[in-house]
Image (cartoon, rainbow, N blue to C red):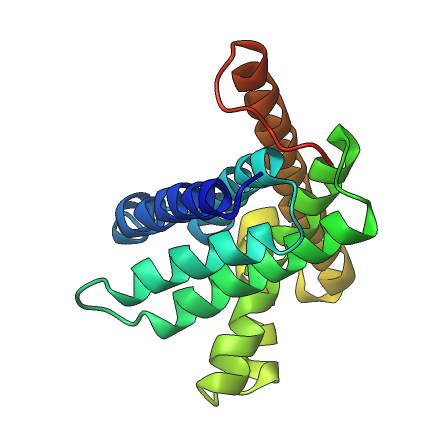
Length: 198
């Protein structure tokens, strides 16, 4: 794959992820939809994985995430730093998972997606607990309160609550990875964008 074609693909998929952050992300947060960060992460990761399918170059997902984060930075109004941290963290996690699993089969995409969507669970601890200075214990309290309300469990079931939330996040990411793989394969079979050889 030529460098120009690679850059064009990075720009296209990065812009698509960024556009989803600006449009779908704003709508989900405005409507206060539960797990909006998780589902937005799943959609963005799926886009990045489809982009990786057609580039097959190390660092592609991070580059796509960087383009998306820069587009988010250019948005008007609101706090853009926290979402930018989220996008870049998700891209780095997915890139690492692809590297560790060789990134050439369906299973790699499923694993990468599942790992990437764990970040929305960790994100508040970094952005609110550390960056905003509210403290890790405060964020932990928020997590337990949300989990207790969602699952109807007491605070004593903290490990169960966290386990269910982790499993749910990973399941959403695994589905995103599978959808990304299947989408890219359909495009290839129909003679669309030709993927790079590994």
